Image 1 (cartoon, rainbow, N blue to C red):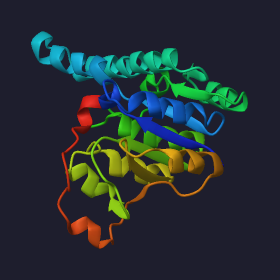
Image 2 (cartoon, rainbow, N blue to C red; image 1 turned 45 degrees about the vertical axis):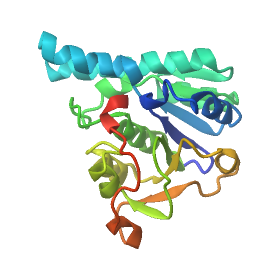
Image 3 (tube, rainbow, N blue to C red; image 1 turned 45 degrees about the horizontal axis):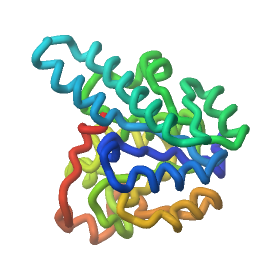
Length: 230
């Protein structure tokens, strides 16, 4: 059953040292009861990436450690923001939403029990956010990304080719059955906040079947390395 007023928002690990972070945390906190936050892995996932080739641990261990990195980043965000509550199950997410707060997803338990999520660096928090949105029946998935601007209609496959999202994202978005959009972190956020509260359209639509002329253009500005945020 689809919820008409819940948006899953992915805020990646690349925002950890960004000047935009506190502003977006405030915007999301003001949307309590309407937003589920999926954190990236940030510097914690980067540490796992660097350690794997040096130590030689396998993909299953790296996958588990990267999920824990997302939880570390999420707990850091929750500590910075009144109204954020860490939640690791669908039931806990719904409970926090009913209380009018913002659930910050702790993904480890749910993801490790999911047979459809393989242990791979090709799957980052972008794909996991799409998976969660489908799992909880969210109305929409919103990606807040560095770079941009993002306008009109943008194909999911093109975003993956530009390294704005991970390579598995188009497949996970398709399976989720949810609508998706993307906004640049540099935007002032006022319109986004209003849309999150009212259920209006947000940002540039992410299309699974690209038709817009925008898709033939090269990536307009600095590329974003999706894997950095898990």
